[in-house]
Image 1 (cartoon, rainbow over the protein chains, first blue to last red):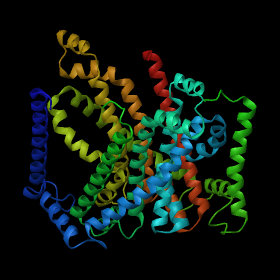
Image 2 (image 1 turned 135 degrees about the vertical axis):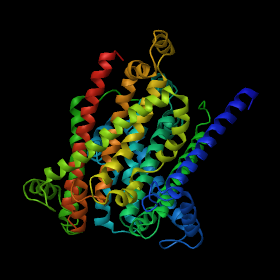
Image 3 (image 1 turned 90 degrees about the vertical axis):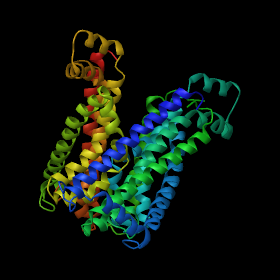
Image 4 (image 1 turned 180 degrees about the vertical axis):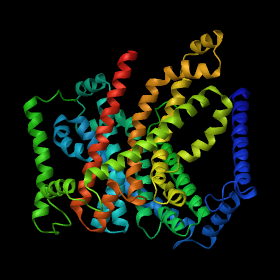
Length: 263
Length: 260
């Protein structure tokens, strides 16, 4: 912090946030465990959640320990996301750069675009069963559409003078992509990647909920069948935590890749 | 160099070529017999199945009845998100303490994928209408709240000061200054909400429902009828598209009236 005033401001925001969290935790405890206003059969008390987490972290639950489930889900998403978004971004850039490619690909894309990511799940199960292949197919379609759209708009939003300068300096081929198209579209590409990542994470959890042997969605599914509210909440919080951490990681990559961007 | 616009003829040639390529590869794959036709039906098989579903009941209802029950759930969840999200957004923008109280909770809940509410939805509501409505609500709620809040926060201070000087209390300031000023932002949020809500609905129906298009797809999947699953995808895609078109209309009308 450069000056004491913002530092104090940060501290006071942190203070109120911590205060709010404490108040909410206390309220939660009072409403559930202490008074039974909300039955713990319907929503778990904070201590039960802690115990459930201890159970899954140490003994394991539903075919594995916590870190194994997390690792499996995160790995699947990372793989599917990288494959899908690299194809999606390339296609989007090509559609942005060439009106011919755009005209050719558009009918295919118009057909795919309105289908919600989750709607691919039954098709993936019919085709590929309950294994990892089906999950990757689902993640692929979830991540594909946003990365194409945003890379495409990214290219179309590049200022005209930049194209004119590039053509005047006779920048063509690979250099044209590397030095004009990709950097110019980069901010928009990352907007797309964030949406893609979010969509693939949600879709994977849904796919695991419907049928899987491991993963966070599977924890949710098992806990729902066992009527184990505390474990349900552990699963939900894990989904949120992983989603948040992956978004942070992507933000870090973005700041590395676009150092010129003012934040 | 960014090419000039294609002339109409080459545009349509390429577009038709793209469509032909897609349906051609699909049809050839289906006809070649690499896989069985139930596994990969030809495009016309899917269309035939779609037409058949509109007259012949599948898992209890014909297609438009499934659609109707999906739309009904969607309507409930979406309206609930609007009637909770807009007032809460205004309150958060007006009262600092509401903001500080709700924000941390909201930020945590927002990162929970709507679909992760499925177990609680099942636990709390069984297979009743409450479960899917909860999940749609969780999908549709954040954009309404965020956009209302941002729209209301961006109101020019002088309007608020003028209203206060003229003796407007908190409620009047919120309903007569913040709300009207935030309308364009709210409507933009509603479009995102509707999209996310519709997507969440599909997920909800795949797991906790006994009617609706999502349910139809799950049953099609169980019967290994790819054509049924694909018909469901078409129906979902078309309705989702129509909802978005309708809301974009509303958005354009409002923006035009505001002169944005």
